[in-house]
Every structure is written in structure tokens, then in C-alpha cells.
Length: 415
Image (cartoon, rainbow, N blue to C red; front, side, top):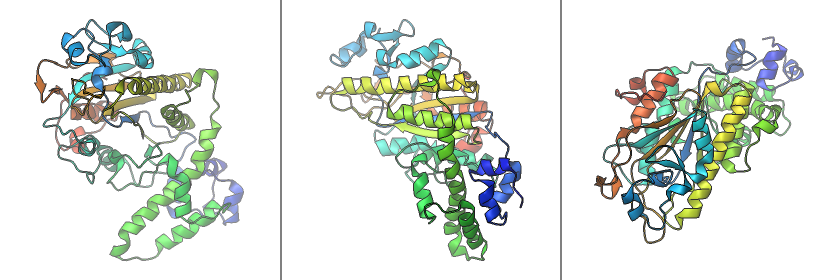
């Protein structure tokens, strides 16, 4: 198959490398190449930020006017003057100035009191529930984003339809489907697993592997073939991703803070600007399991979150791409109303969820936490988290939410 210069660049290889292979392109790439354009960027992109450990929602969106809150938190309670006012009842923690500024630009929506029935305070079980979008989920349950991709992504796409940008393991939300989703931190490991020696011609190596995959195999090899075929796509993409991240210049208007989350969002911003057809990105910020000495640790985490998200949206706005992106920020549960004896808070249930981008109806959605009507020391949830997923699936990603979530959930008027 003859390749144009554009197609070669799209694969991250030079035309000379292809010609050295007799212009033979591996079968899965040959099928994808005719559909590739200079920019296949989706019209709508979803970025998911997980706050691992159970974020203290009551010290994030602070009910400063509630006397019960202050009586329950004599050490950790945030005074009204230390909040950024949203209304007469609640305000952002002062460390979240980045989110407060985004709300002033009509780009931040807060959904209050989000949770699910019969909640668990186990990190693993609760995060599995959120990741799967199903009650009673386990660590082996298929993720809700994986089900979405299975239902909507055609066979033969070149770019991975999703990407996990983090040094940790792949988010369970993207696991369990027919697609093997790569992580940015594991790109080099992917190449090593495929056995490509340093400096090897990528097309020669892909052609050899593609020929092996074309050989007749038994049913017992189906799982291995699935991994190999998915890895071929990851391999081709990985060689491009390293160059793409370096190819987008950084201006003064798009400077990011020197924090881990900011660096990960910067990488996502570069990939969006580079025109990948990837529609879903996930990343995470850990450290929210604040049982002991919570005050200053939580301040630092909230500042990292707000400043990184503000820089990310500034970056996209400067490139006139913000309208294509929606950010979801969630945690597996909140913290209990009362502070503990170690100047921290213990595992709770409901908490706030953030949606960020020009498409949102900015401001507060859902009822305030009722601090006088508790379930085992926790404010009760009022908004089922699956309603947020249904809203994203139907109003942003344009698909049937019931097909992904297994049941119908009313959408929210937040987009």
C-alpha cells in the first residue's frame, strides 16, 4: 500500500522507513490509514479526574452558615472569611480559587450531595461502584466508560479511543471491554513488551508481528491475540505521542503549575491540541484519605486541584478548543460530619461532584447537605451518581445511557 506523507506523519514515522519495508503497512494500520485526516479531534471530549481517598466535601464546598457544621468541627471547620462565597449558605474553600474563577467565567458547576443507596465506606468497594456505574460492583466489574467505548467505537480506529494519563494502574472505569486502553506512563513499557530493539524500524517490527497474528490459531490463543492486536495499536500510537507532546509550543498564557496533576492535565491538553481522535481521558489525584492532621494536607490538595484545572481550561481557551472539552471531578465518597480525635475526618458517604467547561450551567445544583438528618453520622445523599453519568452519556457524548448503565436514570439540568 502506498502511503502519503500525511499518513506517514500521522503514524509517527518517516516515508523513508516505509519505503525500506517495500511500502508494506501492517494490516490493521492499512485498514485505518485511509480514514485518517490531519486532525481527527472529536467534537466532544470527556476528561475524568478521580480524587482518590475520599475527599472531604464539607471542607471543599463549605457550609459556612450552618451552625451544626461549626459545632461538629471545632478544629477543622472553615470560617466564612476563609471561604470564597457562592451564596448565603456555602462557599469554596479559599484554596479553590482556581475553581471559583472558573465559576465566575460560567465554566464550573457543582452537584451537591452525590452518592448512592446503601453506601459502603470501603475505598475499594466504593470506587468499584463509581467505576462500574453499578451497585454491588467488584474490582473485576467492567467499567462504565469501557461499556460506552464498546458500544460506540468502530473496529479499526487508529488512535486509542481513550487514554489513562497517570503513573498508576489503569482506571477500572476503562477496564473489562474489548479494547486495551494504554496509559501514558506505560508507553515505553509497551514497546519493550513487543520486543522492539532500540532504534528499530517501527514498520519492520509491526509488519513482523502483524504477519505472526495472521497465522491460523486455535481458540485457546484468542486472549493472547486480543492483547497483541491491541498492543500493535498502542505501539503505533506511542511513537507519535512522544513527539506530539513536544510539538505544541507553550505560551505565557498556558503556563501550568509545577504539580503532578498540572503536569498530567498539561499532557492531556497537548494531546487534545495535537488533534488525536481520542475521546476520553482519565487521570487521578491521590492523598484525600485524611484521617490525621487533615487541615494543611487538604489545603494543599485543593490548591493543586483548583490551580491545575484553571491552567488546563486557560490552555484550551487560548487554543480555542475549550468548547470541545468537559471535565468530570469526583471522589469515591466524602468524609463524616464530625472531626475525629486526630484532627482528621473518617470515611463518609455523599459529597460534591464538579463539572467543568463552557458547556455547563455554572453554579450549584442539587440540595445542600442536610446536617441534621444523618445516616450513621453522615449526611444522606440526594443525587444518585448514575444520574451524572446518564447526563454525560446522553447530553455530552450523545449515546443511550441505559445501554451503558443497564437502567434508565433521569438526567440533570447541568449541561
